[in-house]
Structures are given as C-alpha cells and as structure tokens.
Length: 212
Image (tube, rainbow, N blue to C red; front, side):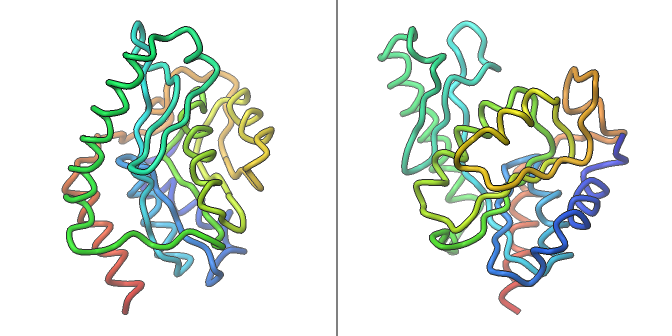
C-alpha cells in the first residue's frame, strides 16, 4: 500500500530514472494522475503535461469504458459495436464540451506541448480494466511520438498484460501488481479526491519550473 499519491510518484520516479533529463514529457491523466506526474517531472527534470481525455461509458454501466474522447479525436473499443450510434455521437459531443471547458480552465493562456517525436510517459494513479488507458494510448500514437511508456503505481495483472500486448506501448512500469484487486483506492492509505484547483496549481508550478 502507498501512503498517498506523492509517495507513489516518488517511487515511480526512481523506476523511471533512466529518462531523467531526456527528450521525454510526463503526460498525467487528470485528475488523480497529476500529483503523481508532478512528483516524477520534478525529480527527473522533465516537463509536465496532461492528457485531456474522458472515457465514453457504456449506456447501462457508465464505469465500463467503450471508448475515449480527446479534443481532437475519439476511439471506440470492440464493446461499442452493439451500442446505438446516436448514443455514441451525443456522448462524444457532451464529453468534448466538458473537455473544452476544462482545457480553458487548466491552460489559461498556455499552449499544450508538441508531442511529435517525443518520449511520452503516460501517468495515472492506477488502472482497473485498462480500457481507458488503451484508448488514450491509441490516440497519443496518432501524434507520432518517438516512444510511449506507461507508468502506474498499481494495476491488476490482466490489465498489465493488455498494456504490454499493445503495439503502441514500448514499456510498462508498474511496481505493484496485486493478486487481489478490487479498486485503485484500496492500495492508498490516503486517496482523497484531487480537485480542479489542485490540478491547475500543479500544472502552473510544473510549467514555471521547466520554463525557469
């Protein structure tokens, strides 16, 4: 068990030490992945960026991802084959509206970093099924990065296996792969929800440090 996201981020930074001072970008998934991404970016002297993406939930089970949406693109999994196209279209429009508002709030005047040709280290506080992460990785691959590395503190074995099998993933770093996995939160003593203000503060802090 981790004490909190800060401890998890510091442990991941140790595992990612060979990327220190390279042409890599830490891409954190809001909101829980941002405190972890900040710790890694600070320790490895790498820029911190976020992946603005949101899953498309199944109409009968919203937590189950059938795809994901970013501001520029969307991707659907095989599980979306039997879902109403109208539902998917409406969900994509709704999610994109949320992401636009979040983008304006998080970035303010700052432009997102260029990802082409970079090593992308994608970070979250943990994954369950891995479906959302796989969707995000497919969309990041379209940005033509040099490599994609997934770094997560905890995930079940089946999800790690799926990530490693992806043709778009070059490496997976996950220090804790438990036999019994119910939810990400069970592996943190402190798993307080991260709010938008904290995300914005950490992003601005990371940006100012890398600019300085």
